[in-house]
Image: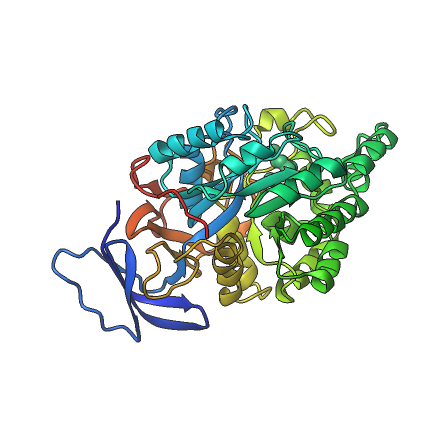
Length: 450
Ligand code: DOR
Ligand code: ZN
């Protein structure tokens, strides 16, 4: 569905300006932006009075794990997309470590078909690389809805893994589009796992899967991209060493991302919150967190993502080292980053650059990522005035918890809008969860990638 909508009296976060004004969406696309306001409603046109609210482009989260098919008790394409909508996210790109893994045309088509019935936001999917599926990778090249090839160079949740040079060369040599790598060095990882197997303290996670693990694989992926003239996106940078190296060695071929949690937490939070913060690659040290912020500011890092990876609290309660790695985050990324902005870590314009324009540019998603005439009417109206403390019970993810529980965040989306249709709403002073407005499958489209 596409809609008409007039938003009046908003503070518009435009690409290079933050101004008061009105914005109109006609048949799903932005048709007019009036700095200073003055747009009058057409007959029957829905109107939102956005006095006191900031209008941003809808967030694009290009790194989520929505668990369908395989573990829909933890998330499915409906619950994940509703969580996204609750957080102002209007487009998501979903990872292939499912059960079965999404590694061929049939499994990709199945996800696309499920999403068309269940998702309330725009959606795209990665195909996963294995040691021997180059033909499958080729079979979905250029297909609508397929954003790229995910290569797990180090093992993580699930069994997708390609780490031998010969197999990596084959993939880089014989495919097109974007390769997105989970860059941790498998050989070093396995060797260190043996060395660390007597340690059960959670601090040993970051010591074992150390910066060198990540750095080795990041350099290796960059070399493969250059040798084969292949577009490469390195997912979740976690260390200052990687960010500094990328800044010096980044060619046009290479883009990178950072997770909200790596910008927010450090070793002390891991100690305090335990398994909830367990993920791969790990939350590291204060100096890494600070370096990742520098990486965003100096352009080494192109976008901010969540790596939304829901595991149940019951599974997490197994305790380190048996707890699964990963945490939910798709519904909290925008309030979290806006809270960082209000605390002086960055500007609103930077939040939009890193969470909207950046992902659109990295993946070649046309007409999204900025408030520009003619762009799609994917929007979020946020309230920067009210700080509210989030608890586990405020979440939409099926696993029902958030690593940010107990934190006071501002910038909650009061309206999330997809193609001009409101899909999620909150009332001032109402529940923090708000209300899901869209029927499953009624809004959001399959994304196309240039
Ligand atoms: O911590 C993680 N969890 N890292 C990954 O690479 C995968 C993810 C998951 O799917 O649970
Ligand atoms: Zn991931």
